[in-house]
Image: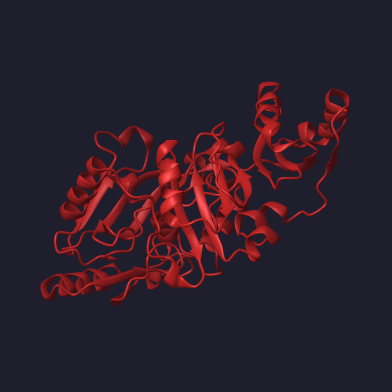
Length: 359
């Protein structure tokens, strides 16, 4: 447990005085995400430790460099969890990196996103000033929710020093089943499951099978197989034998991801079709689509804009093919992005160009 906040502050203040760009990162487990930043390293992985943890209040405060594995181990000991089920993409993934990347895992539609967890934070702005937003309990979070702006900002707005998040009780039992449901019928089937009271906590579809995780108490999960057989015997289904299936999905270690040279992350309304060529893997009951396609980035961005969605070129090999990573902003959104960047980082020294080349 090491408090290096003052050292980080001095580094940012010196960089601001010299107008020296900084590459803000923790362990670097998500360096592939967004545009590469060529600048002096500001390493937040040395600023570590769980500052406070109140299991009875379901609230935890930790420094940015604290490893997610350390936090998750502490929560597991008390039967609790981070509801967003954030991916690590590396053994040393950090708490601050989880917030800055803003990526959520399979449980997100049923338990909330990274931004939903955040109650408050302490940050360094681009001048090296320490600012505090939010609180440590829900009733203290009032006014503009500045803390949640940090989720998904990729270090472009501020350096996260520490954050306070709300937690969820961990379910005592889980089981996963595969269903022989076609892709175009999967969403309706999952909606029916939830309407009937089934405790759905994750879904995926690989174009062949719908995979559904159920999370609840031991008694309810223990009787799940019999209940499914009684009510859905006409649908082919079987229990998933791989206990690590959802971990592999979260960390993108299943075959669909491991052989992907170009991987797109598409966010759109579950019932909307994008009609882009390629092969996809679907999560979040249709709201998240992972797409492997040879289509030009401009075509993907244009198509998603027309259906009110958003596309991100999540991974690309070689990196030269990654000139455009994130969905181009509409003029009004671009204006507000610039204003936010100016307010938090007036000299533009924090991760310049990480999200958009001119920000």
